[in-house]
Each structure stands twice: as structure tokens, then as C-alpha cells.
Length: 243
Image 1 (cartoon, rainbow, N blue to C red):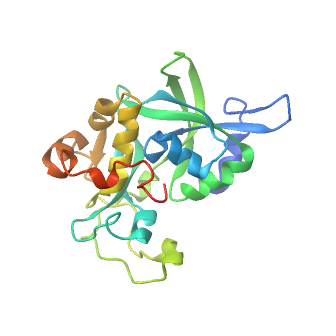
Image 2 (spheres, rainbow, N blue to C red):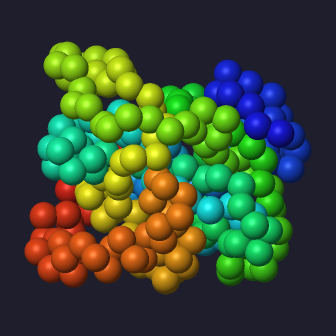
Image 3 (cartoon, helix red, strand yellow):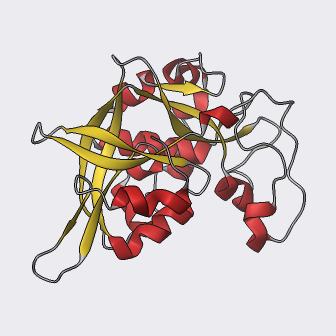
């Protein structure tokens, strides 16, 4: 079952993903992230009280870089390079049941759920079973996924209309889900550094695809010389501004 952000609180009431802290009566919710949320520091920017950020796997999903990132568009170059079509963030799509999607599972207080939903407002949401790497336990979590019925072919990417930076959610008028875009370089670099820190970079590269749904991310990265040299601009954990 997939739901929009407005209905997430309904599935968040599921006892498998939420619980009450007996000490203070506060409700906590378990989430799973697979892009920039693989980074604990990135997750904490949105949910400052986030706890227990840990490695896990979700069966039957793959990562595709096919969402025009409005955050990148808002910030402009180098986060969004329209001439080279490097404007994409990633989304999870259902795939072969043999595929394993590396994720980070973490817990947030219910009071921070709205901030998470605002961050992932372009996605649908579902419950997934996560196999924790450290404990071997299977736990359920809320994960954002692509509204794949809206993932359609589109014409070449066009530069966004000029609008005030504060209006970043309306600075791009084209379709958000596209088959003709490439990963935003700083965004991809953040995701790769996070995956490397978790010890799962190989899995990240092999279970991720470009927007065409066919080209493996590993092949793309190997073809991009900038990912093997000259990366100093984005090696600082604070260099990625906004996620």
C-alpha cells in the first residue's frame, strides 16, 4: 500500500513502526532512508532528535535517479546543472524480489514527522520490512517511494523559470519525474560518501540506476572522471547545503 504525505500519520499509527516511550509518554516512529538519508548528519538536519541511525536492507526495491530535485534547483549550480541535465535525486522503485536496497533505519519523535514529510513531499510512502545488519532482526519502517504511475517519458530538460529563491518549490514548472536526467553531482557525492561510511558503497553502486531505468550507476560513475579526481569541493560533510 502506498499513501501520500497527507495520509502518512495513518500508517504511522501502526504498532510495528511506532511506539510510546514509557518514561515520558512520547511517541517515536521508525523510518528508512536510501539517498541522502543514508547520512546521519543529513537526517539530523531535518530531524534533530533522530536516534539509532543504523544499516539495514530492504528486499525488492531499487534506487533510480529520476526525480528533479527542487532543493538542487533552488540552490542552482553546481547543485543543478541544466545544460548537462545533472538535476536528479533518487527514488525507490519496486523491483525483482532478489534485489536488496541498502537503507539507513532510524527513529524520530512524532513531533518531527512533519519536517520529514516536508522534506520528502514529492514522494509516496509505504511500509517496508528492513533487515538490520547489526542485529539480523527484521523490523518495519516507513519509507518514501516513487509515485511510479507518474514516472513518464518527457522532452529534453529545460532551464527553470527565474523566480525568487524563496519560492524554490515553484521555480521549476516541468514534470518532476523524468527519464532524461542525470544525478546532481553534489547530491550523488553525498550519497556515495554516506554509503562508503556505512561500508556498502558497492551495493549502492550496483543497486542504483539512471533515470532510463537501465544504466547501472556504477557504469555511469566509472565514466565520470570527476568522481575519481578533483572531488575536493564536496568532501567536507558540511559542503552539501540543504540535505
